[in-house]
Length: 175
Image 1 (cartoon, helix red, strand yellow):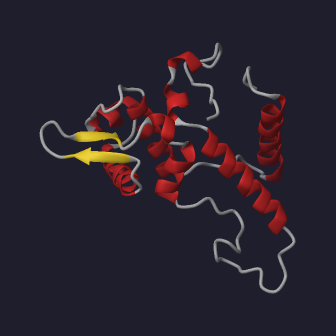
Image 2 (cartoon, rainbow, N blue to C red; image 1 turned 90 degrees about the vertical axis):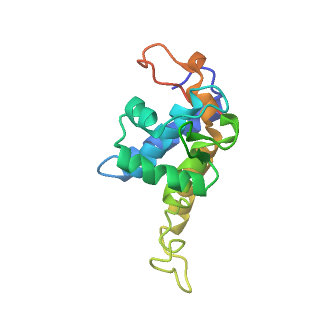
């Protein structure tokens, strides 16, 4: 676990790890769309504030197919995470500072709200009685939502946050 995290933060992260590893036969998987969105915003956050990048440059730097990136950028623009500019000097830029964009903002821009309870998804309403697993899934949903809300793209893109042994991957920090 990351150094510098409080005991409560380490316990929370351990609880999430245990929950996801023991509840599911396989790892929970992030959708390709959400993965591309996070990587695209990360690439924008790595540059100076206000920098406009061509989608081709984002796609190349993050190994995202250009056609898929176009759809992701549309979703991010609709959610006011990025802005697009047309023309020869056009491209994509962050709509607000990277420290004000959380991983949750980006995830929900392409996937919608994080809903693990089937009744909240309106798949199977609980009816008169709350289903037996409602409290469990509601708790997992809250933990996941709060965790994604606390990590900003400024923190992810900060080169000083790189930890030894992570091969250049950033260590998440909280806002």
